[in-house]
Image (cartoon, rainbow, N blue to C red; front, side, top):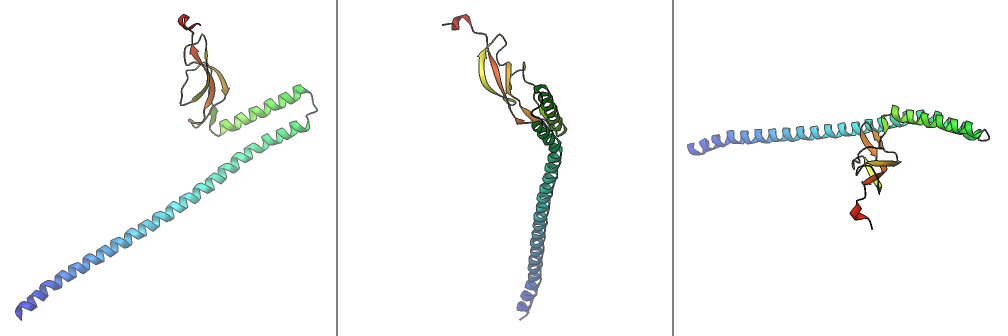
Length: 169
């Protein structure tokens, strides 16, 4: 009988350790679940904030565009005016639009005479010229960057270099 009591007393602490381990695992599982729930809530809050921010930025850009639209309407209403006055009005509107773009971090790329860079430019035409090969000869469509990142590549005509005498047919 003594042996069974000793065996039982040995198992008693082991059960207690097993119970403690189970309890610790349960606590860790609960902590992990709470952490995951907190993270999901944080992610949803950040998505909501980003949506709100985009709406505010969109509103700000629209508010900046409205005076330009007003000027277009005035120009259209006064279309019976002299050509020179209409042209001046369009030039002023164009300047307003460029100012709006610059104020929002958008800048036009300078291309003519520069070296072709496939990360900034899209070559549409390659022609022979006196300029070195891959020199931009003409800008066919402006390219733009937003805070230094390309948002539209410039479409350009580039030089193929001089034609060699052997190439003549």
